[in-house]
Length: 624
Image (cartoon, rainbow, N blue to C red):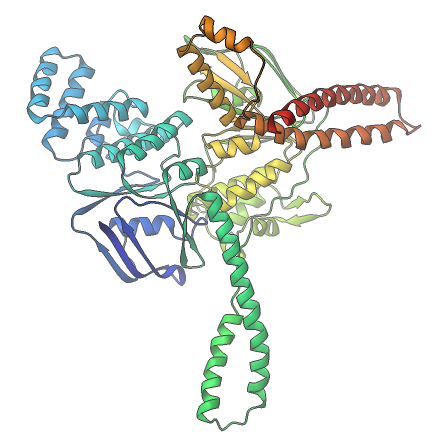
């Protein structure tokens, strides 16, 4: 069934076109991810399709049997009403019945519960009530009579998401579900549940998301808004990257060909007499077409991150017997941890278990109830917090950065001005003089990151850094963090981002239970699944005998394959470090203290290399 048709749609803000003459179709069952840089019109296009904005030109046709449900980044909720009134706002007998029944249960009103059961039976609403229960439970929505105006940003987002999912469940017609960054402010378990829910519901979906695992799990088609045009790619995110690279390479080849042809035609134009024959007039017209093609530029601008990190000493951060509670709620109990140079730590856990408190304690923004937090003298924190930018009204972007510093030292020596640094972060000279409050959510995040790096930190703390950042900027941020020589601590629901950057996890389970897992998030989930399977399937006597038999050829697991790849990266680094230390030890001017430190380190490296080489050999046999 045909849902939506769009022909030659155009939208501009002022003189700047967002997209021009784009054409596309959406059919029943399509699951499409829309991606683009911040400020290129993603959210605007979604609003046009949902009727909240209008295009400047073009045609939009939506099947009369199709209803459009829009989930926005900044949800529009009724502030003076309760959570339950906002979620069950649709006028439908079954909606009213479920709303009354849920309120009766929350109030523990037995008479109202009995009346609700009778009404639910009459309307045959039990199946959907079970679905509503699941939605509310998985999104951690409780206290249904609480007023919306008292909720945090994350709570508001989850209420808006619940309302959208409940709405599409009640729709009798076909529904096109449009979602703008649905995973923001959801923890990992909620995101995984939402993946499965959208797949099970078999909805028709158009979605903007920066979560690449979520994108691959839910969508099978990617649309990209780029240079005012729309490009369509079938398949997953990796396929999109490959196809886009091939497209840009092909476009650049065509431009180069046009430039070569343009030079020849330009010479002909200069030599021609003023009087034109019909034949030469045709060639003249063709000249202007070639000129237009030759003057095209593929602006694939990339955010550049080059910083001169502050020197980091031998001591980083030590936490000893740290305790922290809020009333009866324990966050940390006798917690010990020592950060090392180059630490790449991921922190995961449900909302409210103490992740942000932990980050505040290691920065001394909050004090523990007891215990010690020792921070090295050379540590310079860069805190990318969820709070975002804090700025005065009517302050321009360039003024905001100059309040931090006028100049910025570069990694390769020298320095650049605040304005030049802003250009590295894709803020054009014109954009630098706009007001901060007028920036998009993604642009504000980019400015926040810029001002943090402007201080040359050597210990980066990133609390949900991926929210509102576009995918191209995220890819550059990931590459930068992979090469960052300092310490990095990341709290994120973005599994792809975590897998790429962290090598071990602190898992906050609640009630002051914190576990250290040596691996990334995907490896941790595999391990959890294995633990669950082991609980469900106790080993019988027969299975024990089988286990004791000679081992057959093992099948390589995802975890083993990842470990093998990591070893191949780590071993050459350790070899290089060992050689560097050996060269330093040959220096006759070294002090006793320096010789002692280098000797200890070379001993550690030798032991590490032996362990890693043995493990590499084991994994090589499995792979072979």
